[in-house]
Length: 568
Image (cartoon, rainbow, N blue to C red):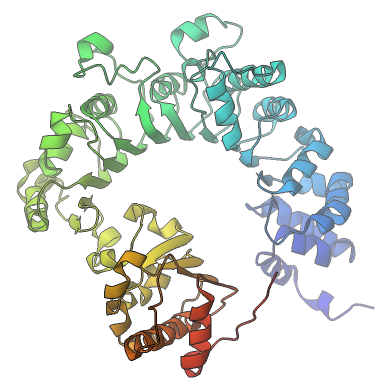
């Protein structure tokens, strides 16, 4: 007898599966009958997200007792899996990988994500086989501990085990293979450790290194898309030489980056004739899109970027995310220049523009001038012939009065109408990383409602807000925040925030005078309104238990959530 559920067409079930996680699909629909088994396999073969080992909603017990045996022993599932995502912060990932042994036995595996994974011999051996015979896409983000191991290798007084040294050498060999003719990858995202050891990981593709390992031809013809994070930029130069069909290159240079271990960018003014051949040009005929994210601390780094852009004169699209700090006193270019149209054209673009049709930039720089110079910066684009000719004059410039930063962007929507929020953000990172923030700490004062009203829009991923309640030394003057008009908070609903923290040294006034009582009442009413804002509040942390008592005592009517108090 056919159940009512089975009357539904396959398209309906596939649509339902698209809204469920892989473990929910398996636990709910697998083994019901052959039709559902076939639908589940079809979902895994088509679903880009695939199997994610490390989801927060995946319990260790269910995974170990039910899901792992099912995936490991069912040939139809093994043949259907196209994508696997390991999260090293979750023990499920290590159990799956270590107990599953040869992950390259998944015959149709095309995409593999290894996030915060510790480097092991088994992992490297598997990856060596996968990049040759299975994978088209690989993401390899190593655990932070492996970065510490690379740094320890340079300290002779610290003993590093022979097994660790073996793994590091195997990782270096793996990099050789990734950029050789043996590799079948189309897309690669990889973190290169900060290497100060004798291994010279960042020199693994240099001409001298390749000449010593002539067994493999180091020219990858298939790789098209590379996203790389590293410390030494010379690896990018070598990579471009060995990936001749590269179409999209994204580079993130870590803090205090340099060209190589010789620190050639800090020795003085950058001279092309002394450090690099002037005639050298990258063979990047197919490279169309280049993305750069980094910080510039001194003139040598800026001049190197100029040299690099001059070698990318045929690129069609460039995207730059740059912070100019100017921490070095012997950097006249950075310390004495205004970041405007002239600065960008001179230092952040190639002298010869052949094919560039799209130039997107976001530059944060320490502002030496007052905020009223922002209009002068904007006007510099409107009068510069290069930007006028390409109609790239619609830029946005914003002055940050807290950190004295100038924010300059080619996309006005990125920083449009944000100046009013700066006074409320005690500690905030670069604005272009706002959409990815999950935690934010803000100052608790009368203008806090200005960005709370648009928090869902500005910070869609923020799940925790910590309100800085003021320092004890300013306690006597902290009545100002409690003059906030409460009606401005009543209609604000935070859809994604699940945790609120209130604290950091705010001091309750001593004694029982009316002034202190009034302040406690005002604070209690505002805290009650703030606590009521999140639609799905799960965690509430208050530094002083008295504040919670005041909320119940003075503002119970303003509290629209149920508080569950637990003690340990």
